[in-house]
Length: 423
Image (cartoon, rainbow, N blue to C red; front, side, top):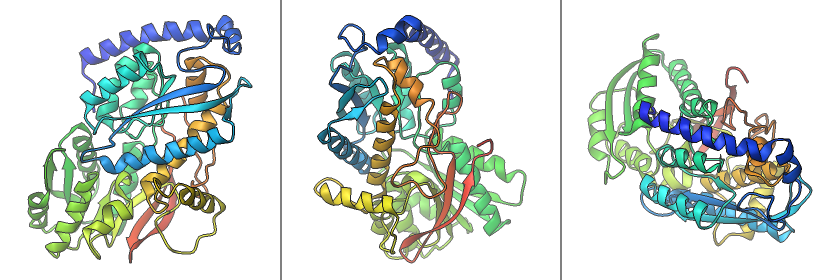
């Protein structure tokens, strides 16, 4: 998504105002106050006993499959609270009061939710907002209010620039789309350097941006995009789009798609007996949610990337962190499916949120934002061996290494780790 000139002007003004507020909170006098947890010295949403975090995510509607992100995060926070809470960097132990809300992936609802969370519920921070468009809809407001956005489900290429300009966006929990796309495109070239490519993409800024990056990549090699079909988020089915793409006789089907549209596309291609090599974005790789419902064999030879253990596989795996996850899921089996990769992501994000709180030396939002921007080499239960998480003031993506994978015989088969250049 590209930000218009007027939008950037408004955002810059909001950021300037919030920067003054944050500077006042985190200067030398503010630092002294931030370690004094009296009611008058802390920002909204944090006391001697709790820290309040807000969320706005699709709990219903076409993207309701992402509800499990919230469910697993909440279950993890509940366990942390049951053990007494989080000992933060200022030495005070606090419980996490998590307030998730439903926006059904509608940016207008996201705005309404976030205003209530900040103005009425007085949350300390926003956590795990989902989707580029909903996040862009609230970013100016949250920045103006001095409220950081942490561990969001997006990988938009726009965020490094916005953070550089002063936006209070600390961490994204998808790989930067440009980085993930580069890995995907190199996979395409290595499998068949002269392949013809058909693309299904969402008719929004991100979908169009992904398609543009692919077309740009093919300008320097013998790959060729021979067909591209778009869909709206309100489209009931993508069957006609997939039929059109099949008629292009492409060697590859690339799915710049999410949610049920991935399932529909794989199912229709299978019904048409079209068996190209297939590629899908990492946000839509959960086998139980997206791949298996498409039917037997429909996802065979589907390629993507990951950074977490394959929780959906029945293959033997004695990784200690995976065992911890399975035990956790069993304890919360009413709300957490231990084989759901999206739920596993929510668990992973919750662990990173807790680690950020542990490193937050004070009770100001500026302290939290600083801690989130300075995570380095954090290991989690489900992170693949060789992959750690972190963030920075110039690059707000917690994932800078991914592992390639291919779906074979009903399970993901992992390949090699690819690091982002500069990391």
